[in-house]
Image 1 (cartoon, rainbow, N blue to C red):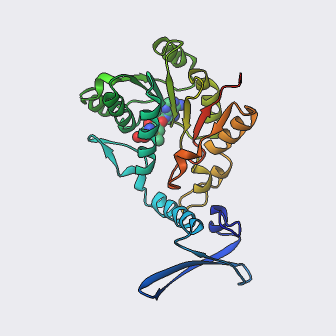
Image 2: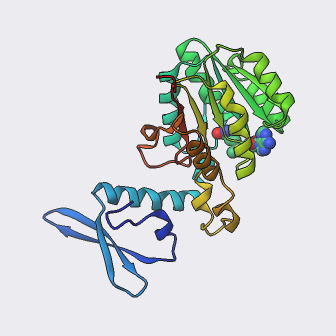
Image 3: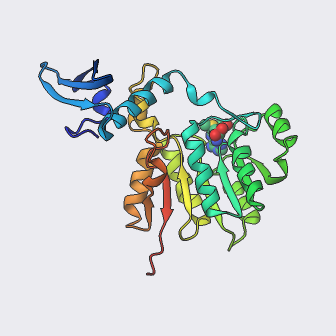
Length: 275
Ligand SMILES: C[S@@+](CC[C@H](N)C(=O)[O-])C[C@H]1O[C@@H](n2cnc3c(N)ncnc32)[C@H](O)[C@@H]1O
């Protein structure tokens, strides 16, 4: 948010005009973003090199890159992954810090995130990824099963909210095991709300549940966005869950510090309520 309180929602359109200019001064290129109200009055000029300027530029980059489907570009060890590189780096930091026995992950797709997470576990020297997807396509399954990281990946086919799937996860990740949960399957509000409810049981004190793709909220106003996403998104489920937990679950903004993320407020840490 800028000093004038300009948010991504404002940039999205209804409240202001957004311009930028570049001017060379003392051999430096000054770049400023000017924000005007609907009636043309200047609300604020934001220096691109300020913290606010960086945030606005990051928000604009997210909008443009999301429209260009940049998150579908990366691969990890040869397998397509649907993530922004910054989010991949943040997951690597978190896994390295937590050193979990299991990473329970909903939404496998091609398998790129399972392979990324398994490769960090391989460097740590322990741990398994449990990847759950409602449909694991044959060619994706073959690629994952033939991958050097396959020994650290256990796949379950079924809906992430199916009690039978939860039973299978519980059978593998026994009580006492240190688990990191990553939710990246169906991004509707209802589904994510249910997933959070079901998977929080696997996360111990000081461990994390990462709820991905809260960006769907602002993606509602992208050229190809769906208006219903403004309400129907993971971020709404995250906010409600964190508020209702009365301090037991907190958003760890450390993992959003690069500002370029498709998972705003996504890194949820469980706190010890007994102290
Ligand atoms: C965004 S993709 C996952 C991307 C993957 N985590 C990555 O980073 O490369 C979402 C996946 O969720 C799966 N999915 C959709 N509904 C599901 C459900 N109810 N249970 C489990 N998986 C589901 C889809 O089949 C799809 O493969």
